[in-house]
Length: 313
Image 1: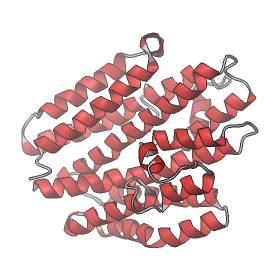
Image 2: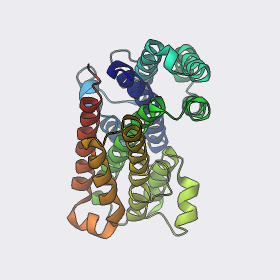
Image 3: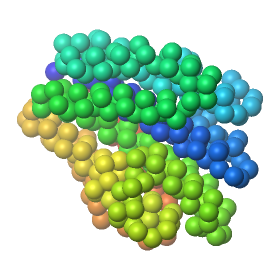
Image 4: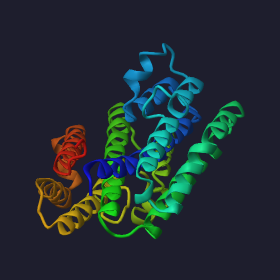
């Protein structure tokens, strides 16, 4: 496969995953600002920070409020991580490789891009944000279902898997880092009413509220939630589960191209580290440092994949 084709497929999948993740982050922020406590501005700031958009937002806006943040994260064309920008970039990459994606994949992506601006504008004006967030997740699921059910298990599939799960790792690590770092040090009585509602909102943002209850039947505890979203191999959005998929994708490419690239070794090392880790050691050494190392290592792996497979060639 040409490096340019691999690049476009990788980023098509990555931006579709990012669009969904931005919607999930906004849903968390929206839920938390509705809780009976002060700090709406702080909640939106943490949302922007989780999305890596705080600096870009503050460069253009002096006030952090619901309407401005939501508009910036949904519809701002100058924000490369807005849902609109993500859908547009994903569509542009898919269009460039139209013969490499299936009809179902293209129609799911193209219809989402076409319908989103009007839906988002109406939802903001009518304060119908929860329905919009549901719609974005549904369209992402439709695209993902089309991909999984119609595409050949060849290098096209493996590159889209890499884009999806590298983006998912980045998102899970960022939201955990920001939310855990903000909530835990400032709450001596972790597990109170407001605190539990905050963590419930975070779990719902990754569709993990009910599955968490299946694993942990006690009250919400930050270290259990961190363990679930980081180290549980059965949780599909956890760091460990996502790196399992990354390793599988790189193994698929290694088999297809009859080579063992350095990026596969890097991913296997990270998966091995996540497999043997436990929350006691992570908390003792510092959760923030651990998550920052994951984010930096994930970016390094993405760069190594781009180099190995000549994305810019």
